[in-house]
Image (cartoon, rainbow, N blue to C red; front, side, top):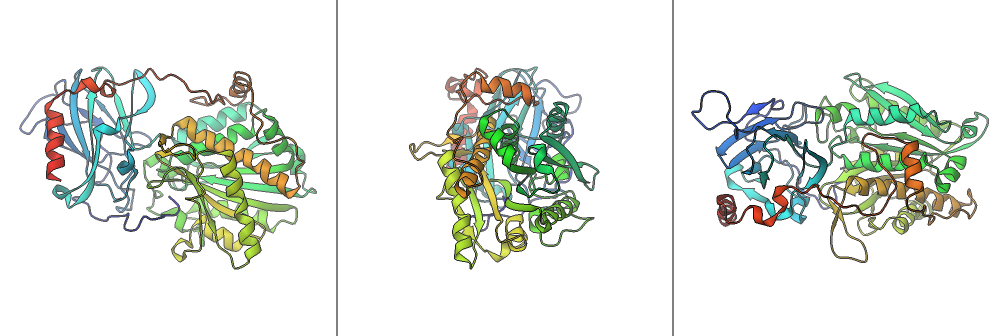
Length: 508
């Protein structure tokens, strides 16, 4: 989260014992038990890319306390979790208590719930909110605890639980590899630098190759994402932007003819790979180090900022936009943060783009959009670049909720899906057409209201930008038949687990 709005005291430094490293095929057995784990003795694992679970305590055969592993080299941040459970019995029921969250405010108060999938049902679904409880617990130094109940319905499945939809470094690399293989003349991929752990910092450029003529003046839009590794929705939004810009949609074609899009999809590859929530390998919150990034401690910021400043200094380049994409843990919808300036004309100019985006995206909120000059944000990308780029440049943070959005026509919160995040990205891309039409760079046609005919455009572009897993442009709702046993209200009845929750509610 780049900016914390209405989130005072959101970080707690208290933790019961140091939690270092992820559990690795850890079998949780009753106290005093010796021998090989039996069926029903759950085995927890988080030793995989983006995994995070540091410790598991056996409470009863129905209840387990789980501890998030803090970010590497920084014990302050404990939010992201991503782990698997196996060796269960059919219809085995359990309560999991995640007991060491570092945040006090959370969308769990608003109905958010963990995600789950299994080997036989690989599509992520949310655990029903009625089985999730978020409360301050005196047994854990008054830390906030998120408890959820779950019924394992298939004993041969491996179940995976996560804070939000994971989007790994490997997934990004596979996605970019597939795009490169298409040999599109308007798409190029560049290595800006290597991280501390020797992972790629990729920058992609999307534009008509004629725009790259060194003698021609070019208009540039610069997008970045995943400076905070646990904010996975940012990657889905970013992929939505890319998918749209490389498509055959008439708006995408017009944008490529006039604009150079430069996108850095993952600013913190090491943090993403390690399963951190906010920090890099070395424990730095990179979004507080844009002012003077170090080439050895913050190499990805150093390379990205140098690239931005080089574009800004060029006589043949007009850097119109810098947008850093994040996810927000306490607010709903998509929204933007911008800067305030003493120059009223500049201040008013930068308020235009969020209004245009709101007209194109029903999940975008102008009420949550905020312009500020908070001194504690001086090291963020938005604040730093807003002060050192040309006065004509617009610098924003685009935030999207980890959980849900409300539209102007409905008071019901709609949970985001992977496709929902990518749709926001597509709408962000479309909004650049409206902006450049307003400035006169692009003629009045086509309109951003152009919508492809169902069944044609989405199939063609899925073939053009094959991803793993693939995404398409079909906005029609789909049936989800991957219901878990827990989704059936009859699965619990008056079991002891439900009684335990009632006791917990009375006590706390």
